Image 1 (tube, rainbow, N blue to C red):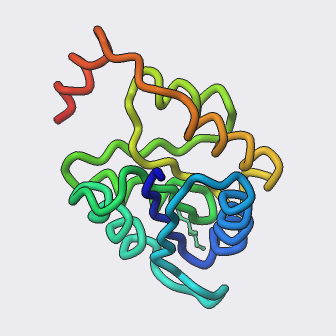
Image 2 (cartoon, rainbow, N blue to C red; image 1 turned 180 degrees about the vertical axis):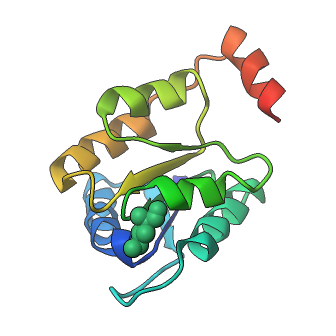
Length: 143
Ligand code: RB5
């Protein structure tokens, strides 16, 4: 079972709940929801960091994080060493973030990506392997 963490602020809360349900329907994922747990306003950096630290420490293999746009929380997550968080607004971006960048965190915007598209993005992001090869050299250079 792939170990996954989810985290969001209030702007991404609703989409996080939708994706959590979707992951349960798909099956095969051990999902740990690091919050937030309501639509009450909270600050996204703490949640981005929480998810990033869980992935960087190996507690989870991958993470999916959410804020209003996906931007703030991805910037926050990317401050943790070893994290490659990609804010994706299309299936193509999600696929390439795995194939070429070995993204270990997917960021989504609850106010910028419709739920049905978000599900497609999540599915391809989870299913797509890293290509390695010349891309591995470049990813290593980021580290
Ligand atoms: C919160 O209003 C909003 O700024 C936040 O969810 C996110 O979009 C920041 O990048």
